[in-house]
Every structure is written in structure tokens, then in C-alpha cells.
Image 1 (cartoon, one colour):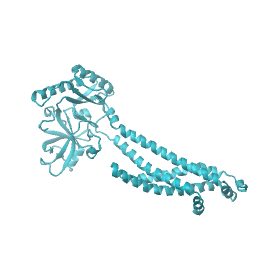
Image 2 (cartoon, rainbow, N blue to C red; image 1 turned 90 degrees about the horizontal axis):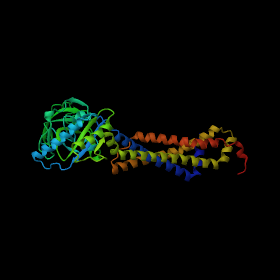
Image 3 (cartoon, rainbow, N blue to C red; image 1 turned 45 degrees about the horizontal axis):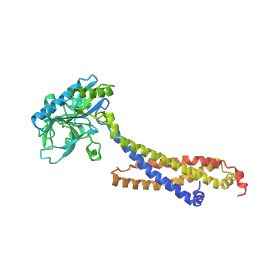
Image 4 (cartoon, rainbow, N blue to C red; image 1 turned 135 degrees about the vertical axis):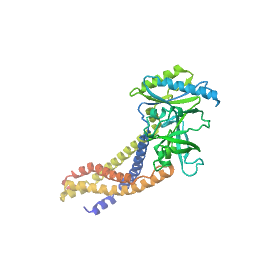
Length: 414
């Protein structure tokens, strides 16, 4: 089919052609970047924490009238209160295990520092989050131990955050071990945490840090388990419920702790939460953003398709006599359909070229202002093919209507 008649026809409808080209270009640019953004959000909310999330509960509470200060008597009393809570929770029938735990993946206090291979912290430094807890922490969280062993009971220290005591042993996540010892021989080696020595006695496969903020994204799986019960007026616990008993265990835990000591604060909204509830709250904004972007994409594609249908239908109405002449000269119905499809393909082709350029420029702007990654070329290719296919689908109905124009129309007066 010669392009000359098509181009000649389009010259008589410049405004409509420009409108559709711009609409296709804007749709391609926005949809490509929006889908890429949706994919980024999906990957973010789907990241594994490293813990066995089903049945995992976090308890956060604060005692009224708890001792203050760092003197030995206050520290011992605070630790005794914490150990009483742990024993109470461990005795519940629907609880499988309990651990002292300052933090949990996705939520909690985040203590971080630098790991190095020498006390001067010269050379290689790895930023990591510190998880303070007891010998039950690793099994309670359900972390997969890929090398070494768990903490022993006699290795657990207890002190306040202001103490200078040094943890003699640590368990690290595999990303930490791989960065410090690329040869794979981290187990049994001494590392320095902010200049203080500790021996790696275990390596877990994965443990996400407590923060999901952008500033921690470059080290979101760099974690270290510390054999320390932190003593203070506030204490947090990780609880592993028996299979299928998570909700019951949460209710029992609240009653049991208040029965032991009612002078504590455990808010209904966040005092006792399952990790699945925490995940839902943490990623609520990401889910909302993904849904919003999806709705925008659907609306844009729908408006673009409707615009193509409307404009083509308008052109068909204006060209009924010309179509009738072509039919009278022997053009088949399929030839009429192919003509309008070729016309649309030409318009859409121009639109996707401008749209691809606009998509790249939009992505560069997002990279500069919102730290968005570079848009992969595959998204552009799929977007181009999708818009061309959408154009062909949208033009098919009015093109079929045009093909049904009878030859006798050519004999009628204008």
C-alpha cells in the first residue's frame, strides 16, 4: 500500500493528527515510568526479611516507676523484671519460644555502627544494624543458620546502652560476612565493632535491618546479632507463636504480662503486633502508590484508546463518499480496514518515537529529583509495542464500520 494517499489524507486533518500524536507520546512517557515505579514498589514490599514471618510477634512495652540510672542495683532490677516477663511469656501454652529483642526486621530501635578488620577502623568499613537479644533470638526469629552456632546462655551479657561492656561473640548476616571476608572464611574470625573486638561464631543467611528508610537502603541486609539483653525502662520481646495460634498468643501475652505487673504501657495499636501487621503498616504508602499509579495508567490508556476511536470515527464520517468511490472501484472490505490500520500505525509510530524520547527525559528528571533508578530499555520497548497494539485495536471497530460503507454512496450528491 502506497503511503502517499495516507499522508495526503492526514494533511487535511493536521489538528487531529497532532492531538493523537501528543496523546500517544504523553501516555507512553507516563505509563512507562509509572509501571517502572510500580515494579520498584512491588519489589520493595516483597523483599524477604530473613525471618519466618508467620507466627512472629513483637511486644513493646514500658514500665511505670522503673529504676533509672546506670548503677548496679538499678540494672539488676531492670534485668530481673525483663527475665520475669520472658519466663511468663515462655510458659504460655500457645507460645513456642520467646527472646529479648530490641528490634525486629522492619520495625524497632535501630542501633548501627561500623565493622572493620582492625581496631583503628582503617581500610574496609561495613555499616551494619545491631540486634541486641539473648540466646533465643535467632531461633525465635526463625533465621536460617548457614554456618557456626547459636549463642550460649553463659555468653549473654546484660547492661544499659551506656555501658562500655564488649560482646565477645557475634552472629552476622551473610552479606556482612561476604563483604568483610570475600574468600568465605568469616567463621571464627575477629572483627571490630566501632573499634571493639568480637569473634564471629555464626552466620545467618539473611536478616533485614529495622529501617526501611532510603538512608539505609545501601545496607538493608547488613545485620549483626549481639548477645546482650539491654536493660531499661522499656523492653521489647520477640515471640514465636505455635502454628495457627498467633492471634490467641497475642491476647494471652497481653493478659499474662499485665497480670505479672499492671504498671506498664502496652498500647492497643502497637504494643503487641504480628510481623504481618507491621509489614502492612510499614508498606501501606507503597501499596497506595502502586495502586494510584495503576489507576493512572489504566485511565491514560483508556483515554488514548477512546481518543483514537473517536477521531477515526469522525474521519470515517467525513470520508464516506471517498470510501464509497474506492468500494465502487473494486476495493474490498479488508482493503478499507487495512487502510485505516495503516493510517493509525503511521500516526502511532510518530507518537511512540516522541513518547520514547519524552519517557527518557522524564526518567532523567525523576532520577535527579527523586533518586529513581534509570529506566530499563525493556520497559520502553514493551511500552512502544503496547501502544502500537492498543492503537490497532482501537481503530479496528471504526475501520470495520468504514468497510461496510456501500459503493452506492459514491453516486449520491454531496
